Amino acid sequence: MSTTTDNLLDKAHALLERLERLLPNAVPAEPAWNEACAFRWDHQQRLLRPVVNFQRIELGDLLGIEPQKQRIGQNTKQFVQGGTANNVLLSGARGTGKSSLVKALLNEYAESGLRVIQIDKQGLVDLSLIIGLVQGRPERFILYCDDLSFNADEDGYQALKAALDGDLVALCDNLLIYATSNRRHLMPDYMTDNLATKYVGDEIHPAESVEEKVSLSERFGLWISFYPFSQDEYLDIAAHWLQHHGWQQGMTDEVRRAALQWALGRGSRSGRVAGQFARDWCGRQG
View 1: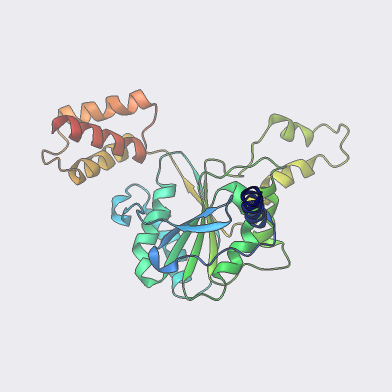
View 2: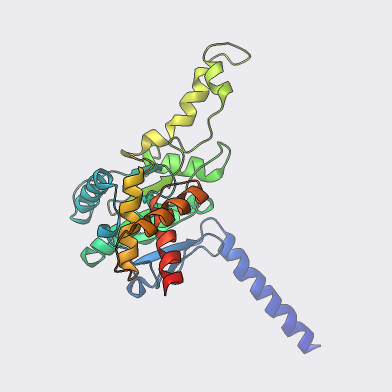
């Protein structure tokens, strides 16, 4: 009988622990701040987990985006040095270095106190918990949302919109939000949205549908756009990564032809595709 009772008590304790983690006002455990410079927010467990094996990419590895690097780099430098800075939306063509630029900035300024917390859109509803964890700490934190896009009825959409500019409680001074997206407005646009501004149907103020779609992206202080690379830019990036992986013969006609065929097969001339070609080529050449 006592064994059965003990089993029931163990199950009850386990259930209570799981319920406590799900409570909206539960206080997260203190993160292991000294273990890493990058962290990932675990929405299920409400924990900030260190990312020990963070990708080591340098600003010098990112070619073809000099204006973007300069603008975001200056904003980040201001922030790390304790000055005022803006939340940033990096949007545009896929594979052009949006996410890599955020990683490179961490590698550039980690020794100066910069930290990055990666969060997915489901975890944005926990923004108040994350603010509570970082508020008052000496480090400077970038909350990094990769490949972000929303539908209007998602919980994270309203949470992010309020946090950026609208909530009564402001973001703490040592936290900025950097988001990357292939969508400039972070939400899908439909032809009916534009038609609604011309043809009045059931909605009294149809233009407000469009206003709602752009309202989130406009709350970012900086909009940085990334564009598809030209053929010459693509080949320059491929040459850089070939050298990085040990290829010493340069961009010969054979390599150039293979790089262009690789891009044609992928349907894209991007930095990501150039890096993938270089790894494949160097691996096959030994």
